[in-house]
Image 1 (cartoon, rainbow, N blue to C red):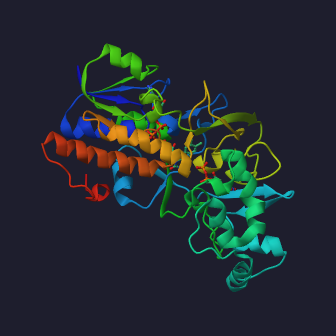
Image 2 (cartoon, rainbow, N blue to C red):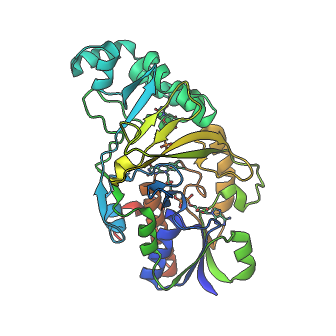
Image 3 (cartoon, rainbow, N blue to C red):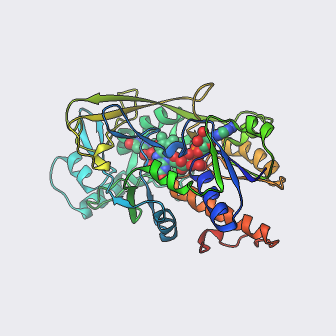
Length: 383
Ligand code: FAD
Ligand code: UDP
């Protein structure tokens, strides 16, 4: 008999287990169908001793001091400025688009003023962009959109950018200065010794039991619990009663090389000719000193049996289907849906930690017989 059954040992499930065990003193059983904790943020050492992000690069970033402090209880940090390049038209380009990229394009030194004037000419006037194509062409025009975004997006999502929410391509910054960092958040760092040790520490409370290689359905038949926290795909929970939600999957192809580094940056994007979208050499970011290196090519693929649902699809049709599941989920009393798959949101790690901390506040209020007023900014509650 457990107080809580938690499905999934990723950020959502692990943060909630840690909070419930340490702050409420309640027992938690986490069931995880994979053979490890950490969800998609899991990392491991390969045969060459290279620390790899098993499910694609996970660049931690946040603007929230509360989230840094919370995770800081379980890890030290290694600050990293994530730098990437784009390879197209037979050469490397500075990416995301910034003044250096503009200089590469025109073949001579330039200034912010000149770049802004040129973009003003190229830009398509759209007051409130309604999709990912509009969000880019309204900032930089068709030429740069076609060079860097159009085909990458089609490969990644098997949809045109105009069929995706503005937030998908809109999350890539476009700058007219020389700031060439991929991300803009003020805190950008990796757990110093990797994500997996951070999760191990989070889950070390004796009130938490973790059962790996265990599916939710199997666990339900074996254990009793009072409250369920579910972080898997919501359509699977409801046996796809309204139909299958669309997801995008990936195939990772690692290659170890007997050389210190393979490419000039941690990540190189391949927007056009290649079938893969990016090559990641995470050693640039982890700072490991080793004579060999491992690179990972990332191939987008359709989701289906035996494949992981890595990305919910941020698009109006998918959201409409999700809202049917969300309406049903809202009626549940003893089940909490949290995380990227259970709420069908293209969220980063820090957003998932924020969501889990907010859910914890709701659960704690319920335990005390209180109700949080709807709209109250639980995300900024001090834990
Ligand atoms: P998950 O990590 O997916 O955890 C859910 C867990 O539930 C999984 O381990 C799964 O096996 C388990 N599960 C599902 N169904 C069942 C079941 N029936 N029974 C038992 N267990 C089950 N975020 C960033 O901030 N920066 C990045 O650079 C970044 N890069 C990313 C790159 C890729 C390729 C991907 C896919 C994601 C990336 N993310 C990144 C997002 C990040 O992975 C997520 O925000 C975060 O891991 C979500 O945590 P979660 O707990 O919601 O889900
Ligand atoms: N994108 C693109 N070209 C790039 C990089 C990104 O068109 O060189 C688009 C693409 O649609 C991608 C989205 O921007 O899915 C978000 O990119 P990001 O690198 O943040 O994706 P993630 O790391 O989440 O896969």
